[in-house]
Length: 284
Image (cartoon, rainbow, N blue to C red; front, side):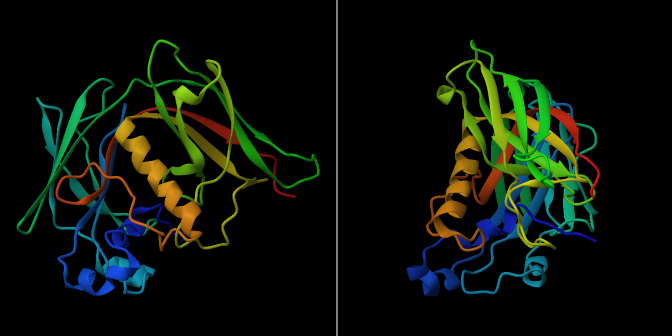
């Protein structure tokens, strides 16, 4: 069974530089959060403790640092919900905290409170209004190619300030949406309100096969346009910069990852969302 992790455990070694190895080993591990709530959906949270910089980063060590006995409470200021945890064998880590009653709504603010042992970790986010995808298409540079890229089109509301993230999921290969490489967009950089952009596959850790930035014939691709907050944009841009600078997402080159987590590291994000399914030609 294919197992992937997008970014969670790449965060765990960013709290110090290479010159601080000995100091890091003596510090208490941090709680690492990857949490999100989308418009029309429930909250999901992945939770772990940080791994010392000098430790080997592999799937076995990752599993040793998963946190599956925390109490996680989500609130919109009026209603609240304590998340449950389930085992999802398609993922690494395989344990996911999930909600089932408090559904995300655009314009609302959502807080998260994580209680684990003697620690409390908190964050707040909001869900921006969704922007609809107009189209998403699989396009090859040469008709005889067996690989190609996704091109998406949407209209940016000129009267609103928006930050975007484009993510994809290949059916049967990826259990969750993966943020596209260079898929974080600030509308201040748009020359017009009619947007057309090429999408590259996002970077995966622990892939079963060699990573490629393109899609292939035979893929059934879910393409999602997310609206996000400035905090989420800053986080994902800093994560992307680490990959670019270090050439290796597991060992980032510096400690510039942004975070909105009080008492821990990572991201708690609210997203608006619009999704389109793209069918590619059958594999030859």
